Every structure is written in C-alpha cells, then in structure tokens.
Image (cartoon, rainbow, N blue to C red):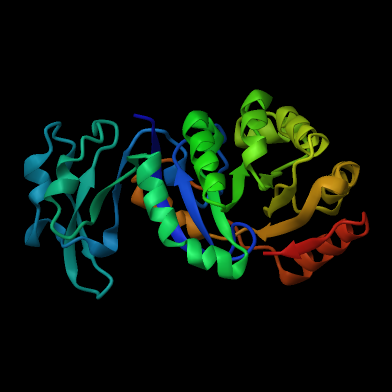
Length: 314
C-alpha cells in the first residue's frame, strides 16, 4: 500500500496559502539551507529527536541508558535545568545511534521521540476531511509541504488527486528542485504552487545550499507557461541575498513570469530552526544571525513592487 514519510500534519495553518489550511509535511529534501527552520525535514528516514525541556535527567529516569542496543547513550555532564536545578542529561552519540526507536519507547517524559511516520493516503485523508468545514468557510484548503514533498512524488500525486476529488483547494510548497516530469504530473491537481526562490546567483546557490538554481528557475517558467499559479516565497537571509543588487535580479526574473504570479512573499530570516537543530543532536553548526530590520524589508518590498509585482512581508 502506498505510504508517505510524514513528520507533521498541522491544522489551522494560515501561512501556507489562502484561508485556513491544513499542511501535510513530508520528510526529505535535496537542499541543505544552513538556516533551515525545519531541519528535521531534510533527511528521508525516521530520526531520533530529543527535547531537553521535557527530559527528567538520568538520575530521575535514565531508562534510555538501559534499552539502547547499540550503547549509543551515556551519562552526560551535570548542568542545570530551566528551573536552575542540578540535572544530568543523557548524551546520545549520533554516529553510533541507528534510530531504532527503543529509547523513545522507553522515555517516560517523551523527551526522546521519533520524527517521521509512514502513513497511507487513506490515513491522511481521514485527518484532512475533519478540517474541511474550516476550508469551506475561509476559502482555505490543503497544502502539501516538506522538506520537498515532490521527492515523494507518487504519494504526493495521489494525495492531491484525492483532495481534489473531495473538493478541496490544493497547494504544493516546493523548492522547484525536481524533474519537470514530476511537476507536470501534479500540475492538474494543484491550484497554487508555493515556490521558494532562495538565491538568483547559481554559483552562490550551490556553494551555500548545495545545488545550483538553473532547474529551479526553469521549472518556475514552465509552470507559468503551462497555466499554473505561483506564490513566490523569498526567504530574506542576512549576508546572503538581502542586498539591493540581489533583489534587482529577483525583480528582473519575476517580471518575466508575473502573469502567473499570485503574490510574492518576503520571509524575513528567523531563528526558529535553532532549537529544532538542537533536538536532532547534530554536531554541525547552524547559521545564526540577527533578523533583517523592518526598514530593510520595506525597502526590498518597494524594489519588487516597482516591477509591477504584488508583494507582502510574511
């Protein structure tokens, strides 16, 4: 039976397309944005996470130490919890851990938990149909997101078909870094593409994010040419793409396809991904900077509006 690897289903979402929506988040993404606000979405397999604020410590609990078949969990250094009380947390060696989930099952406080669950289309539709009255009242619908949901193409396609059969408005949140054939198949069942444009300089795109951007730009043009509608989303990242010169390149490109653009959303960088990165217990550093100022965001908004685009700051 066809299943998708899903890490969250979020109801009452108002930032993933028009109206009140329910967003289905699929795991797996070919990009490696250093500022990613959902780092748990990047890898395809189910992963172990640890939420420190829930942890009772190895003295009060410590069940995870006993059940790990790989011996990947040991007693960490003594520290203090959020209340200033002394506590010793477990230390998980992710180079040894194979994400079997034994520790998560044993964790009384659910501080250790598995991120990523296989669900059938029927199971997801059962959840979505509960929210259909909200969609009808608000002009909302279902958004399939990620990660990169089109990296699970068969599941995403079948889910979109079922949503359309149920009369739901559909949106696909995508990086655009997939084969055109994949996008072409979902196009008839997608009312709106939420389309990320991280950077217009392909060399910089590859250096920072890990892949070039030619395919992303080509697919945006093809969607519009095929009659699809796009809501362009530009994450505005300090020291990466926030400059006036970079937004000139955005404006020049978007003005060529503006007949298919619903709106352009500017998404100011934020630090919400930092805590999620810590939950994955990864040693790699995550990008951290101060968010762009309101004045800068307004200036970039006016820049793009000069090209005849409808622009919002999200």
